[in-house]
Image (cartoon, rainbow, N blue to C red; front, top):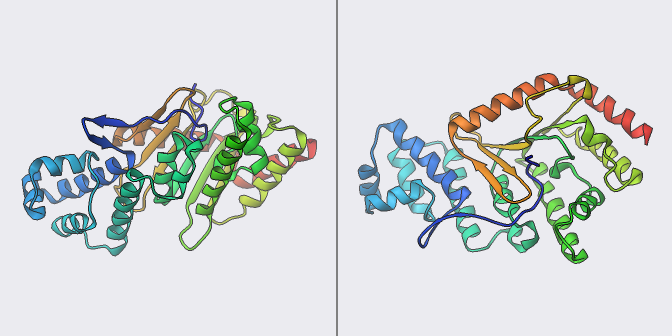
Length: 301
């Protein structure tokens, strides 16, 4: 069963020869491909604008090579994309991808993140994350003690120092929920995730109290799927949908398992999981009722 986006597993990336396809690179290439096709242009025209080969444009659009800022600007100009916000975000995406390939970015200081490194890099340039978790509280809303108890419980690490570094990195991610342009988070969890005694009663009570505080943030929406909902479409897999601001920009779906990570990057897969998320949301309690349930569970502890 899929466990969602917060358990670390060995890192894996798609590669061809000496070129490496990263999620960030494919994200950027896919958006530029969408802009090109919307303009009715072909790869030879893009290649001419860059004074490059058609093969290079093809590699760019497949995320196989890093992209320079002048190339991103030139293609945006060719495709008629004039919005400063869109261009700036694509430039940031290109820089983040370059830094990721060169092992830069705060997340690369934490090898303990393993497969989550690429996810955190993508999360850093996203505008919205929708997450469905059936077994635990999402990482962006965890307390250090709860995150530590999860890490100890899944037996991936044997070194306590490695666990502490992993917890430190997970908590650092939560900075995205603050600042001038905070990440918008819509999280849905199962009632079971509130009642599972991760770390014992004291740790769990503190986690639930932390949830109550975090849900007050204007950019955080939180729902609980109660036991009474019965069978539902989220029973077989947990997942994160990472979204961007522009209409038509492709969403990315992330899952992880005990042995590998899974990225779903097609429009069909993204749309399918968007429908799943909406169905789960309709079966879940409204936010004020979810908060009431959290308080009741907290009092029981």
